[in-house]
Length: 128
Image (cartoon, rainbow, N blue to C red; front, side, top):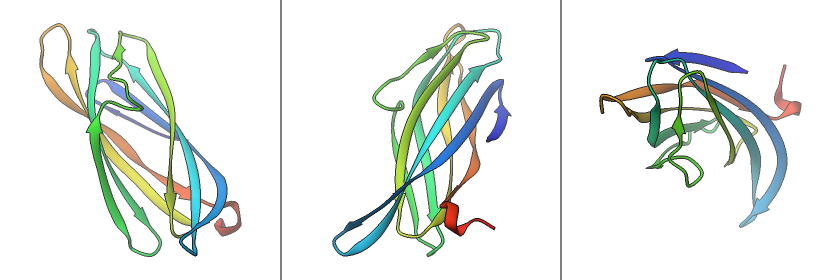
């Protein structure tokens, strides 16, 4: 698990290799990840949007942007944690992801970013 605190928001990520599948005769490696977002600030916050930067061992890079996470824009009160699961596929057995959440403090309406730490996606058979 990797963790990072930015602007009073602690982001923790745990990953899991789910398996492989073929699409258009190309092997794909499926990964799931669970993200915990803990509010260590004094005020409630809302997660408005996210951007992900995904890289794999074949030097393929992709950016994904959108509103909220898994169709939600959660409000996280002080000392509370929001947890969600999602996933991605790569065309190689290992890679990494990192990103940013755009958030707003609900009491003073100040916008800020919370950094999603770089985390590795790796199949069991590719680990040292």
